[in-house]
Image 1: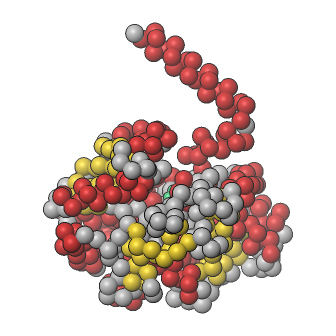
Image 2: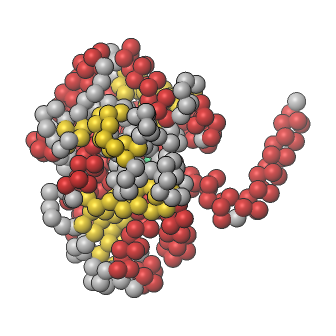
Image 3: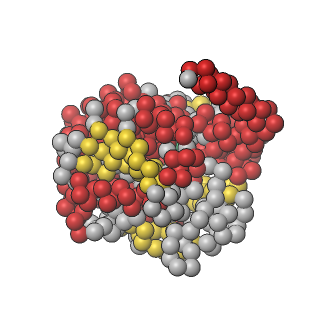
Length: 426
Ligand SMILES: *Cc1c(COP(=O)(O)O)cnc(C)c1O
């Protein structure tokens, strides 16, 4: 799988890292040279056959690429419209697409001679992917995480620690993701000579949106080849959009063409009121702002601070959106829709029953839009949805919703059993 060239990367944005009105590099003066060093190394490495060969080997041996493209024959028949295909990205190691980017940036860091990687994580998925990549490549890993998120996301904290990462709880501010981001930048300002800051979505100061798109575009290149092999011309591609990394990676090889239609799906949450959703492109809650090092569309409160958001899926509740996606939404190349918590859950259960595949709650938002598109299109057309992650990680959210009583009884029995066995050890 060939990597995009630096010419192609530069053709997507301005010299200063803008995609239309969005993007840029809004960082403190001390970090300018650190970012310039990364940009230079990135362009050098992606043109280097030995970097690409090593990345390709890790992709096949460690991530498990290529991930399959599944023809959802049962679902397609029931829907009675277009054929539905599922890019099974959730079969990638650690359960989602995030590992593609984590491995790419970690390898870049290693070749730059950096001995330490820092990251921030909200729900913990990016932290898990980064910790796994660092373990594989033998790099020290420190993950900043809001103290409240640490409490809420114990399974992911345990996994990161199992991979040998140090998880640092952040007690400042609201003790959530935005405070973890501030803390990571603070660390980096003092440590950049030996430390690489690994950002997890297609956002942040330039050139992070480029790096993330390039490392995630393996999803779209594989999909394009897998469709061509079967002689399928897609009518529409659908992906969920948090920060936008799985969407931009899935769409990348198609961006310069007029077809297929590209549809991004945001979290519609529980309603259109303030704090009830995370829709930055649909609805009218978002404004242009400069947050976390880049300019884009953000959900902001009256004081210009990032607003509270809601989504059933932790990966879609980020208040901003990657600058390139915001720009492509504005130009109309990408259409945006939203799916509510309930619609996502319905799509998830439908595809589990018909196809034996459990979507991550994030990806289920894309599935919801894909199902309604497939229903409305003619049978000879094809709809392709990216299943960015698999749903195992969401059991603590889905089980209490789908089987509340049984799950509660189970947890209570587990607690009793744990207390008994700990008591016995004392
Ligand atoms: C983190 C995550 C997302 C959202 O992130 P993007 O950068 O928008 O892709 C989507 N799906 C899954 C499974 C995730 O873990």
